[in-house]
Length: 311
Image (cartoon, rainbow, N blue to C red; front, side, top):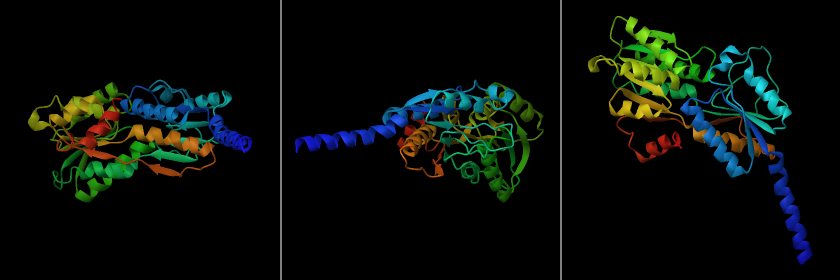
C-alpha cells in the first residue's frame, strides 16, 4: 500500500513539474525602460514570474532606438528564440514590413495590440474607451465651442491612436473646437519643447489639453505650470509619474487616466504559463483604467493603484 502511494506521488510530481520546466524561460521585449509605465509593467511581469517559478530573459531597445533601427524588436525576438525561450511577452512597436510575423514560440502582446504578430493573446487597456473616459471628465466643465488641444504621440502606435480617437468621439459630440492637433513624439524633453512652441503660437485661450501618453503628459504639465494661473487650460493626461500628484494638488491636472501596468504585466506572464501548460488564454484580456481627480486622489483604492507605480 505504501509503495503504491509513493508511486502515485511520484507520478503526480512529474505531471506538475513537466509544464513548469517547459515554461522555465520566458522572453520579455518592451519598447524601452525609462518611462515609469514600462518600469511598472516589468515589475508586474517579474512578480508573476516569481510566483509561477519561471525565469525571464529581458531584452529591450534603448528608449527611442527602434525609431532609427527598423524591426529591432524582431531581431531581439529572433535572438531569444535561439537562446531557447519557451514564449515571448512583447509590447510591440510597428514593424517595417508588410507580412505578418509568425514566431516559432507563443507570443503574448502586452500594453497594445498589433496586427504585425501572430499572437495567442493580448493583455491591454480598452484604449478607445479610456480615451472616451478622458474626454468625459471634461464634459461637466467645458461648453460647446470650447478650445481644445490634442497632443498626439505618433501615427503608428495603436494604443495612443485609439485613445485619441476615443477622446475625439466625445469632443465632436459635445461640439468642442480642436484648435491644436499635432504630433509631439516619444521623448519627454523633445515633446516639452514642441508643446511649448505650439501652445505659444496659438493666439487664443485654450480651455483644455489632452495628453494621451506619459512622455507627452510630463511635457504638457511642465509647460502649463509655467503659465499664469488664470491662463492655464485644464490638463487631462494618461498614466503616472510622481510629478503628476503635485499637478493634481495644484489643480493643474484636471484628471489623470491611470492604466494598471503592474496588473497588466502580471496577467500577461500568468497567461503565458497557462498557455504553455495547455490552457489557451483569452484572445483579449482588458485591464480597467481609473480616472483620478483632485477630488478622489486620496481614496484608498486610488492610492493603492498609484503605489504600484512606485514599487
